[in-house]
Length: 110
Image (cartoon, rainbow, N blue to C red; front, side, top):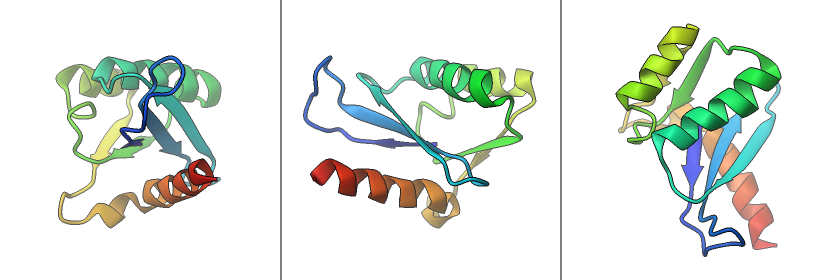
C-alpha cells in the first residue's frame, strides 16, 4: 500500500491516491482520497480488499503515519493480517507499489 499526491484538487476535492498492488497477480487498485488518515486507509482496506478478496496474509507499507497508528495496527492484528513496514533506507522493499505508482503517474500525464 502506498500514497500518491498531493495532486491539484479534482472534483470532490480529491488530492491523493491510495495505491494497492496484489503481489501475486500484479493487480493495481487506486482509490482517491481527500485526506490521508488512518481511518480512510482502514475503510479502504475493509471495503476494497477484505470484502472483495478475503483476508490477506500481510500488507506491506512504508512508515507513513496513517499506516503505523495504533488503530490501524490493531484492526489488522484482529484480522490476523501481518503489517510489514519497509525500511526508510530501503524503499525498494515495496517495489511493486513503486512500479504501480509510475504506471499511474504516466497515465495521469496523458
